Figure 1 (cartoon, rainbow, N blue to C red):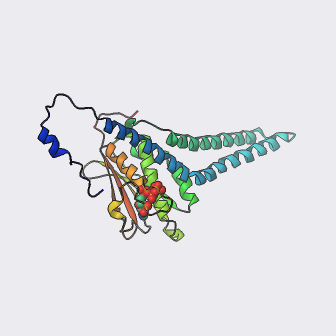
Figure 2: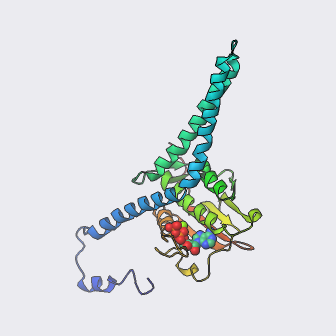
Figure 3: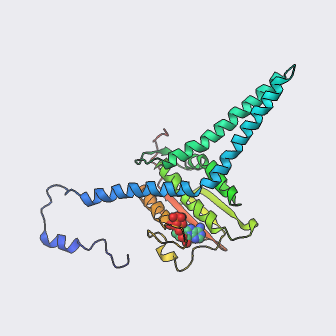
Length: 276
Ligand SMILES: Nc1ncnc2c1ncn2[C@@H]1O[C@H](COP(=O)(O)OP(=O)(O)OP(=O)(O)O)[C@@H](O)[C@H]1O
Ligand SMILES: [Mg+2]
């Protein structure tokens, strides 16, 4: 990467001094954008795949609860003088658990489906809360605590919700993986939102794991840079592409006293734009 200059055709273009009639077509750019869309889709599928054992575990709980409540209802109804209030309570619990299972599946389908960017006015805290179930199932499965510190009075952001959720899931997954070797009490991932002094919205994902290895740090956001045997090294590259395509940034800082801290910065949506 180091030897590649993005402006290497600049001088030759100047020399030919081509008249600027209309913007030339950019088939390469179109092909690149199509490829970028496909990569985003693959990256989403990879994250969903990695989370699948945690998700299976999480889905198993409402399904077991539904089976137990259904059996209890049958027993209650078999009694000579059934307590209908109790049966109604059990049926309500069944409905609640079914909704919870459905919600987990709905989020998974949303992530797995290929999508074109659909920016919409969004409250970043709500966007993060929507993926709490997915994060909690992954965190619990890996014996990691998850904490969300929601900043107050944040401006809205205009984003493709599923892309930003995917970006955050990538960062959180990395943090969970980085904590694998740590003692149980140090295994915590914190997501924090705030308004920065420039009025932009900031989301930080931090942990107190080993932090990014010095040998990797300079290439962290370069595609295929990975320290993991089974890693693609695409997670952070895609995350930064998503951040930049929203007019934002994604940066890394070592956490204090140890660990990693990734900061996503998004421009505040212009005042007067209302939420959909
Ligand atoms: N929270 C973190 N703590 C320590 N190192 C990290 C953290 N997040 C990322 N890294 C380092 O950055 C590298 C690149 O991360 P990236 O998400 O791009 O790919 P990956 O996680 O290796 O592969 P994949 O995302 O396909 O599973 C990781 O291999 C890891 O070395
Ligand atoms: Mg990763």
